[in-house]
Length: 109
Length: 113
View (tube, rainbow over the protein chains, first blue to last red):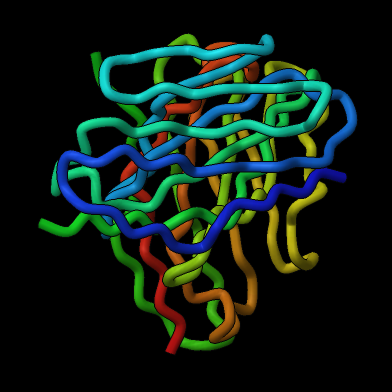
C-alpha cells in the first residue's frame, strides 16, 4: 500500500517563506502532487513532480527526491489568503492516488 | 468549460436509510475518483474508475458502500443502511487519464442522524 507523512500544522507570518515536507512509501511510484484546500472548499491542484528536482509556479515551488522518497512544497511571500490545508498526494503508475492527512498552514499578520 | 459537479450538495438522512450520491466528471476525463473527508481530516480514498478497466475498490470501507460509473460519464456512490460514522463530505474528482492533476467537485455533505 501507500503511506505519506506530513506535519499536521505550520504557522508563519506574512511575507515569510514556509516549507511543508512530505515523505512517502509506495510501490509503483509515478509522481507527487500538492493540493490546497480552504475551509469549506474543495481541494485545488497546486503542483506536480514526476522527476527529481524543483518545479516553480509563481510563489509556490515543489521539490522531489525519488531516491529519498521525499518532497516538499515551498511557499514564498506568504499572504493571509495562503492560510489553508495543504495535502501531498502520491500517484502510482496505475493511476491511483493516496493523499496525506494534510498540513494546516496559519499565516499571521 | 464546466467543472466537476456533484449532487446533492447536502444530504441529511436517518440511520439505516440508503443514500445515493452523484458525480458528473469533466467531459473527456477517463479517470474518476471518490474520496471521503471527515471533519478536520484528510482525504480517504474510496474507489477509482479508469476507462473500461475494472474499478479499484480497495478503499471502500464496507460492503455497504458501492459505486458505479456509466462509461466515462456519470458516477453514483451508494451507501446502504447508513450509520452515523458515515457522516462526512464525499468528494468526487476526475482526471484526464489518471496520471494528471485531479479536478475536484464541491462535494456532498452527508449527515446521518
